[in-house]
Image (cartoon, rainbow, N blue to C red; front, side):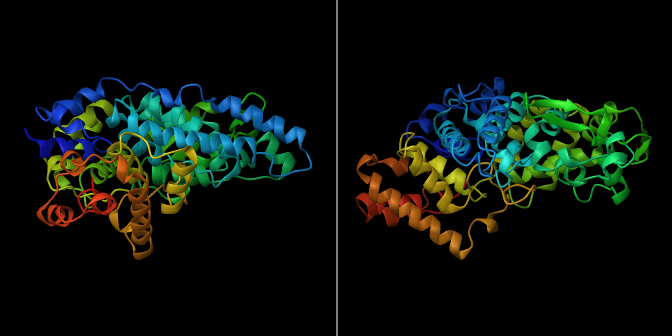
Length: 432
């Protein structure tokens, strides 16, 4: 193996290279990636943060204490969100298992909940810790079930407002179905937009999900039979009837669908290999997903060992979050106070858990390198270089990127902050 392969592994599968990383894994970069998959331990930066139930209970208390205000959670709980966002960013930079951090970001984006919905603000970080991290090397169905039952998802996609028209509550209150969660469950979480479902399937799934809500008093999932639409439902040709278990059985069926396997495989291949996923890689991932009943560890191992994901040069544009974390790693794990991290992510348009839609953040390069976005990147890189140049080792470029001839030539004639700016804005550093 080589230093170039080590730097490739650190950027493609991890969160970027710290100055000493490449030399320590150069003998077996692929083995280093596979070793990372032995466990998904919670980074210490995230320990001690409140769980979702605690935050929801606190939200309820604040609303009771300030009944005349609609922005009860814009102070204390918004600060919690900012603290969580900074802690998650730091964890990405200093975690001893950066491959797990990469996988957490992928799956958290797949099951997007966004703080654009006010109720999600204090529990978005908890959603990632409670839904994604425990299942990132487990079975897809378990993560899917945890995601759909979590208060953050139920609130974000309005399932708490969905009432069966013929339920006990629906007949008294003249309320109806809300299809948001059902539609995104089919389109974004499982089958994909081309997964073979129709509007009738969305309606059936929405009916099965009625009654899936949460109790704001204790912050936990609750099934409310009075809200559930009675009677049989037909989803993708299969009949379901039986209260809460209808949706449970439907989730299992969707998790095992060949369309779901193909959809997940395509997204993984796009994230880890190229914007236009190699068909052979998609086929291999889809086949493994099906053969192992959605075993994400087995699927990830295939991802890591296939030649397509090791095809050089680096093909993926770093998202703003990736860029900030990679810069932190390059600079020894720190870029300053939490406020500075938040300002960086805000400037470049990718605050954690603040995606503009349930589809999550885009995973194609053109979304991040338009003229305005590129200008913001360069402005940010210059600001970092001006502030951090004195802390950058003289041989930093040699240790964190496989610089091509053009980058080496440009940096050879530069010094100090100019050299660091050229490094951070180089093609090699902007890609993973």
